[in-house]
Image (cartoon, rainbow, N blue to C red; front, side, top):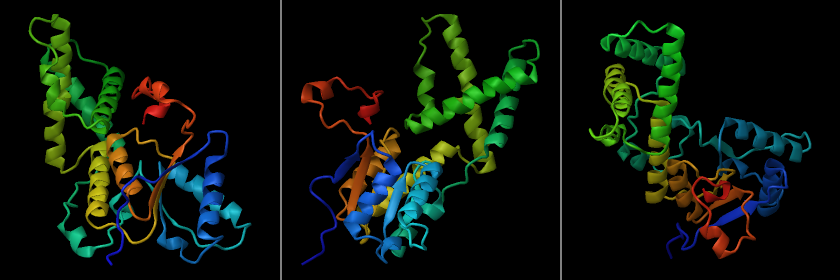
Length: 272
């Protein structure tokens, strides 16, 4: 009989908001896996970010009472890198598109966007913009770029947001956003880099693809993430259906009735 590699129904749990998440998580894992098993390193534990990695690591050490202990492989979803990915099948890993360009540094991006803002103002014939003001606009553009990537939106779609019948200031705004839709992609392409959020999305998609086509034989547990980022939500959906996978949500309200759930929107904490 072939081993079971996927569940028909997702395996999803929750830790009440009133309980300390990291300590409760570790206590539950130790109870489920039998204290401090020697196979902890075979377990992959996905947490939201590197701060959560430290919090969960500290919780494991507290549970061990200061004794030396083996730990699971704790990986951050929000700050994931290629070294954090787990590809159990070497052939599959080679077949995946892992030629992902490096992310541009935050300071480097800030300086380059500031320069583009200054050039934009110069082309309009306005008085030269002081560097501080240009830097603030560049920082706002960087946040906008990341938010577009997080939501999986194509910046090219901005061009159709303001038809000609709309007020002229809308068109001026779109002209400014051309820095994002036209100029910035050229800068990144010339440097062989991509934005940090876009790189994270591609890494998460690569991990999801790998686990979908070759489910890992060892446990994979995603804990603490609500899936508010689409790329993370897609990976969580895959993990929840793995034969040895589970998703542990923080503070999910299990007492709400169906009518209440209907009113929960995407922006609500329970809507992830």
